[in-house]
Image (cartoon, rainbow, N blue to C red; front, side, top):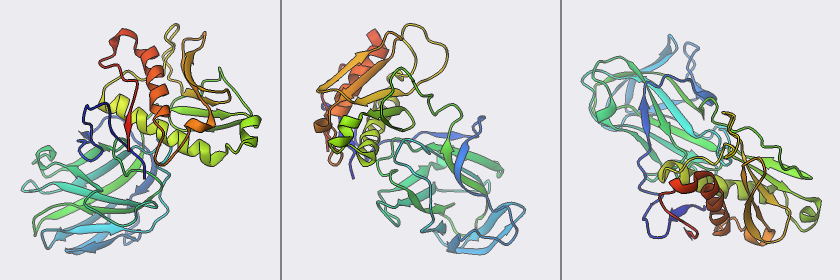
Length: 317
């Protein structure tokens, strides 16, 4: 598994990020995976532990906790692809009593790291849970989560840390925000292309003859998306998605070329930064420093004088 763990001594740890949680968001989530429990009696392959009187009725999964680590879980299901920047939000709609205590926890496993681990736990802090006993929706931005990669495979919900509390879950969804997937920037085109949420990776027939293929593209896009998460969501840079000369309100993917020799960034007459990296700079696991380096130059172009830091090298693990 590869991940960016620090940047020039600023100390950003892949294990210490506080993931943003929004309570009762007003925008809908474009779901890719969902447990809805809309058919009475159909548990949708979810099972329980330390939960009594579990039932599915009225579109809800309900039960009463019977221990301090109650769980409902589903394992080994064909979940969505998490590797290309998509499906970066998880949303849970749940009702707990006004006397609820303890964090609500969601554990996950992927095809790269199956099952459950204390390293892969998403937390809805008790302080964010309203004490009105009503249904509420909790949306977690899991994009910066280091193990939210490969394909989703396992999910486990711990609704409470107290025995004897009745809960009801309306749904659990994984997907993206409306408009969060950028448009293709057609200023560049080539023989081969693969797209992620924020990038287009383009390579030529000559590069294909040298061994660049879909696996190369997927790894390069994953590393680019990894760096994007840190630059935008951790460090707060403006997204490099709009033209610097003639913005039109739309957001466009960064063109990531593997066509020419060398490692460099440039900009187009349309006001968009782009980058080119030859095959020697596309090592996937462990990742090369070259992708985040050149991507930072793209960010510099789009952030101009508003940069908080000037980063031109990365400490990668």
